[in-house]
Figure (cartoon, rainbow, N blue to C red):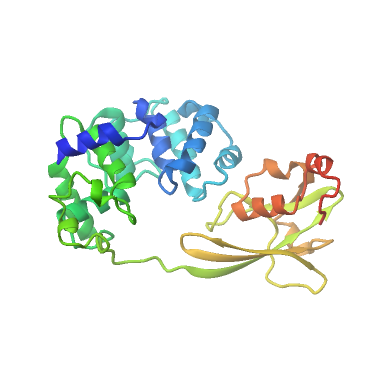
Length: 339
């Protein structure tokens, strides 16, 4: 398997910036960004993030609000908060030097088995196989693993195979190659079986079960949720609030939220937004005066500064769509729609 995989990788691998470094900070950053984000979108964020915070100390010393603003648009904001938290720990506990053994890496906030293995192998050439969605798919198809990959038993079976297959002299190359193979060749749908070097050995191809493997047992239930926001502008200021509870978008800013709609409010817009476990239906209501009970958890900021705050994607999109704020927008478009 290793020779065919390495031959394929040498010809097909994408030229990505994090593949040209052994810096564990930059490798860690790339892995966190790509956890829930495709390369085509994550690349620009990686370049921007690494430019703004070129060292782990730079990230540690940045305000959380600023980090969340740079992260804005990537979603899954717990990733950014854990990046910031871990940067502080590495800076304060390890004098800014990333730990170079698996157990210490794994103990850092936001770093699971996969990310720890990726950092350990890519940065320090330690022999730990990676097991992400791409790798799980490749191994289950190639070796005919019918145990659901989202169970402990399934993961254990996949890891047993990987531990036998990994190139102990070059674990970094093996891990990158098999991840890349799953990303661009053995894809979830539209697999490129006709050009696959493993046709003769692939269980799923030989038994015509490509569309069945990998097997999964659990599927996250998606719950509907309604959000009603109040958009209140007073004297060139707008009311916003910071989401502080352990809920969606923690640490980001949105508008004051209400559970009772007044007939005096004007409906400005409705949108839907899909999260991993919730489907949001969001309504935006215009009000001339914010109810007193909502003011204690909100703050009034100059409307021209709205885009300086890190906001969830539907809030940002609403502001753009309605040309909500900036003087520059009004100057460019004299017929701008006003709320």
